[in-house]
Amino acid sequence: MKATLVIGNIGELATPTGSSARRGAGMSELRVVRDAAVAIDVETIVWAGPAREMPPVEGPAPEFVDAGGRAVVPGIVDSHTHFVFGGYRAEEFYWRAAGLPYMEIHARGGGIANTVRDTRSASLDDLLASATPRLERMLELGITTVEGKSGYGLDLDTEIRQLEAMRVLDARQPVDIVATYMGPHSIPTEYKDSPSGYIDFILRDVLPRVRERGLARFCDVFCEEGVFGLEDSRRFLEAARDAGFGLKLHADEIVRIGGAGLAAAMGAASADHLLKASGDDLDAMARAGVVATCLPVTAFTLREPYADARGMIDRGLAVALASDLNPGSCYSQSIPLVAALGVLYMNMSIEEVLTALTLNGAAAVGQAGDRGSIEPGKIADALILDAPSFRHLAYNAGMNIVDTVIKRGKVVSVRN
Ligand code: NIG
Ligand code: FE
Image (cartoon, rainbow, N blue to C red):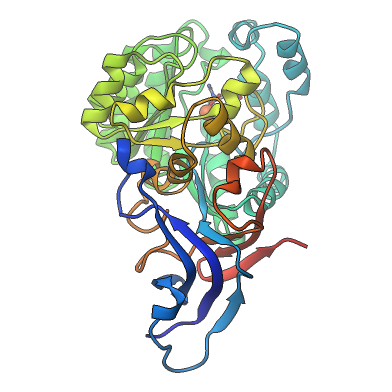
């Protein structure tokens, strides 16, 4: 066996297994190995298992990373964020805290519209400068792949600029970025009485450019009462699918309008939020193999009841957990908080939470084939925790216990 890096002296290696989302009871079936080692060749895992069974390494001696008897888990895949944006909305956070509902702020012309104004006036360099430290924080938290959405421009130039920012950042720093075009994130003032006129504009003027320039892998829509209804959402998603994009939906977050059912009908990669999704629509998602992405920190900051992740898993769905980092409903990339809320308020087991943050997150961005678990053939994205067991991930509530981040076979972040 050839190897460039070996992680040894691992007290506990914990990982989901496989190249597709784990569903239902499968979400709690981790491979847990004591006294383990992981061997990596350049950027690919070549071996993982009990240290005493590791085959000899031929050729030049690999770099050795000593895990110090601590736990190792796969890198986190944060499959739903809006991390490229201009400005902030701290005032709105305090208005909401004082009782003003999120959708009321939106209906009064605040909310996303405020970020649209600030993002339209931000240059590419401004967007790069504000997004870079967010990515640095993500890496420290163990996020090795992140999905990011446009949707704060709602015009041609700014949407393209947001997506370009992600392309530049993907090349510049270690976290892999999966870009999503989310033109239908809100109805711009230019089209305020005509959501379908805005969809016409997108399909004619924006989507083809995004596609020509290969700027996004997925398309997403805010399918919600007062934003884009089922028909407008379907029209956008059908065009996006025909143009070769993978599909995602913000579905049934505030009001149940059937977005989860649409996600199933369209064969989306994921449907996200789902706080109000109906049982029938969730069953349809399970049959269609759509990943259910829950965003507990958003529910936490909006003070909404959490999505029924327990019920979803019991129905046989594959659940992913993600941060939803954005300037409005959830200004947080705290994976530790996601994990704690998953266990404490969504009644998930810690095993299910780990699967939801890694392999199922990877599946939600169409990447379960090459990441999301520590197995031969996968990209070498792994975390050494400052803890003896992965079980500390939610137990050490709200704390970042990631010590060392290995991304594509290189140590890229070590806690001081
Ligand atoms: O996922 N729901 C719509 N989109 C975002 C919020 C965007 C914002 O408030 O800026 C979400 O919660
Ligand atoms: Fe979102």
